[in-house]
Image 1 (tube, rainbow, N blue to C red):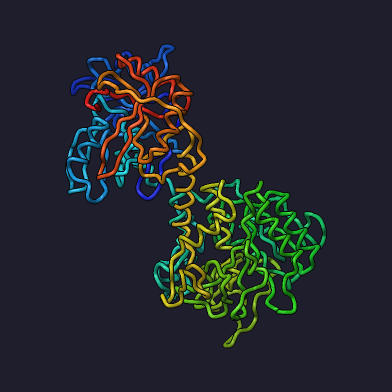
Image 2 (spheres, rainbow, N blue to C red):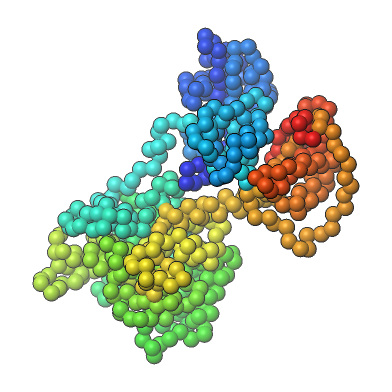
Amino acid sequence: MSDYKIKSGKGVLVLQKSASLVGLKGHEKADLSTADFVRQEVLPSLGGFKVVSLQKNGSTLDDKLDEVRQREEVDLGTHVYFAEGSKKPLVPTGEIFIIFQPEVDESEQAMVLDEYKLALVERRSADRVTAKVTKDSPNPLRVAQALQRISLVKMAEPDLDMLLEEYDAFAMPTDTFIADEWHLKNDGFIPSGRYTTKKGADAKIVDAWKRLDGFGSPDVVLAVIDNGFDISHPDLKPKVYRPWDLWTMSDRLSDGDPGFTHGTPCASLAVAVANGQGMVGVAPNAKFMPVSGTSFSVAATEKMFEYCVQNGADVISCSWGTTDTRYTLNSLKEEAIAKAARQGRGGKGCVILFAAGNEGLDYVNFYAAHPDVICVAACDSKDRYASYSNQGAEVSICAPSNGDWPLIAARAAWDPGTTVRGDGPFLYWADGVSRQGPYKHFGGTSGATPIVAGICALLLSANPKLTAKEVKEILQSTADKIGDASEYKNGHSRKFGYGRVNADRAVAEALRRKDSSTGTSTTKPTTATVTPQVVSGQGLFRFSVERQASQGFSVQLGVFADYGNVLIQAEKMERLFSQPVVVNISQVSGKTAYRVLVGVFDKNADATTLQKAMKAAGVDGFVRDLKGLG
C-alpha cells in the first residue's frame, strides 16, 4: 500500500494504511462492537472512533469499509494507519489545521476550502483556521498532502490521534555517566564534578535521538582509524564489525602497549553502546569498524582507506595527523582520501572526518585540510573556543570537547592514565575524583571529531541516500553560530568553522531531503509551492484547445504554478491513461494557477474507476465535480 507523507510539527510522518483495522463512529445508542460486520474490537476509543477489524468475507478492506459506511448504525468510517516503525494504531479525526500565507484574504481562503470540499470549523486568527472533511472530500490525509503543496498555504496538518504511549516511545539511555555527558545535552551543571557549564552549549544529540525516535540504524558502519583499540571493552565489544590491523595484516588487533590507547576513547564517543552502564556514544546502534595501525606511509594510507571502502564503511573518523611542515601530504595520499570520499558507499562517498589538531596553530592538520573531508575543531562546555584547537579556512565545524570541563570516554584496559598534573596525581580523571569502571576524562579535537562522526552516522540513519558531500553541507548549513559575530566572514569562522554542530537540525534536514527526494517522483505532480522544474530542452508538445462544459466528473491531479509543468503532466496523463486532459485556469493571489484534471465522465462512478487505475499506477488524484469550474 502507498505511504502518506505528512508534515507534522518539525518533521515528517510516514503513515501506512492498516491492512486489517478501521475506525468506526456509530449512532449514540449503537453498539458497534457486537455488530455482525465487526470481527474484533481492538480499541474502544481513539480519536472518537472505535478501532475494529471487520468480517471481510473475501472482500478487500477498502470495499468492506465502503459497505459498512452505508449501514444505518454507522455515522463515519475511516482507515487506521501506522507511523513508520511504530506498532501503535493512529486515526485521523477528520479535522485539519491550516495556516495560510500572509496576505491571503478570507475569500481566497474560502476558495481553498471549497476546492477540497472542506467545512470551516473555527477561525483562530486572520491566517489560521480549523477545517474538517465532509462526505464529498477526499480522506483527510490526502487533503493535507494536497494543501501542503498549494502556494496559498503555509502549513496544513491533519489532526491525528494515537495512544498516549507513543509519546514515551523514546527512552533516554540509563548509562551511569549519561548525566555527565554534557556534549549530548548540557543542562548547565556537571553532577559528578559539581561544575557549572553553560546550559545549551552542546551538540543537540539527545534532541536528534528524539527526532529519530532512537539511536540510529545498525546498518550504518562507522570506522575509526587509530591505534589502541580495546575491543573487549563492554561499551565496544558487542559492536565490533570487520576489524583490521595494518601492522599484523589481519583481523587480530595490536593491543596491550601502554603507548597506544587513543583509539578506545575515540571510538566510544562515536559508537559506545547504550547498555545501562558506563557512557554512551552519539550513534549507539551503529556498527564499529576498528582499523588499527595509523602510518604516514603512502602504502599504509592507501590500504587503510581502501579497506574501509571495500568493507562497507559509511563514516570514517580520524583523530590524528600532522602539522609538521616537513610532512605535508603528497598527491598519492590526497588521491587515496579523495577516492574513498568520492567512490565509497557505491559512489555516494564515505563521509571522512579529520581532527583539526591540538597545537593552537593558525593552520590545521594537513590531513584535515583535504577538501573532501570534514575538518573538526573544538569548543568547550560554555560555547567558547578551545584555545588548543588549530584554526584555519579549512575548518568545517566545531564540536564540544575539553577546554574547561572534559568529556567522559571509555579507556583501554592497559591505559596507564596520566599520573601527574600541576597540583598532584589524577590518573584518569581531571578533577582527581575517582569514578567507577574503565572510563576516563578525554578531550581535544580527538574527542570532538568522533562526536561529529557519530552525528554523521545519525544523518545516514535518517537518510541513507545522502552523499558524503551532502552530509558535509548539511552539517555546515545547520550549525549554530557561537562566539562573537565578528569571528564570522561570509558565515565562516577560522576558529569555529560554520559553527557548533547541531545534530537535531542536521537530522531534520536529512529527513527533509529524504522526503523531498521521494515526494517529487515523475508520477506525482509538482505543485505550486515547488520551484518550476521546466527548463529549455524539455521537448515539443502538440495540442489542440476546445472549450469544456462545466459538467460531469473528472480526476484532479493538483494545482500548478508553472505552465511548463502543466504541459509535461498533460502529455504524460494522455499517454498513460488515454484520456483527455482538462486545464482550469484561475487567479490566486494575483498569480495564475492551473488545475490539471484527467478524463471527463457523465457519472461519478466512471471517474472513480479512472482514479483507482491512476492510483494503481502511482498517480495521486481525487474525483471532483466539474460544475462551477467553467
